[in-house]
Every structure is written in C-alpha cells, then in structure tokens.
Length: 128
Image (cartoon, rainbow, N blue to C red):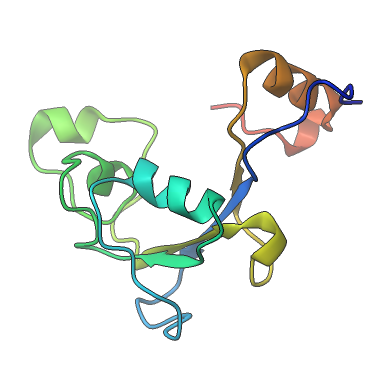
C-alpha cells in the first residue's frame, strides 16, 4: 500500500495504439517536439492523438513508437520498439481515458514507483 507521504504527484497517462489514423477523429492531434512532451501534456489533462508526423524534433521516437519505419542499422537496433506501421497513439489522463488503455505511464520518484510496483500483481507487469 502507498504510504500517505508517497503520493504520485503527476496523474498517470493511459496510452492506446490506434487501429487507424481516423480512430478518435474528434480529438486533437498532437504537434510538438517529442513523445515526452505529449505525455507531459496528457498528464496535465489533455486528450491527444499522436500520429505519424506529429513529433517535430525527437528523431528516434517515431521509430521506437512504430510511427516511422526504421532506416539503417542504428534505428533497427533500437529496442524495445513497436512494430511498424502503427497508425497512431491515443494519450490521455487515466481518469479521462476513453475506454481501456494498452499501457499506463506512471511518472514519480523512484521510491514511489518501487512501492507501486511491489503492490501490483506480477502477472500484470511487462518483463521486457
């Protein structure tokens, strides 16, 4: 159990792989520097679609996220990564997430994360 002093100060963000770029078409498309920035904005309350071409600066994030095909040995060596092609990603605060996320991003101090992970069912954790 999380102790009173060990709260997660940043809301968790849900992430779902979209089946098509038009899925959740009524939601805004993220346009910005990086996946990290998109996660930050979702943690601050935004519901966003991240599509191929959304990330303007961070060069390797689109490859890792499956939004761009790996080019060359270095990009092919980046692991773990989602298989190309990924149509897009939906990011939203967990309390506003439409449906069930594929992954939940939790950002907190190491001791808070350690307590959270220890409280989870080991079968629900990703090993690699």
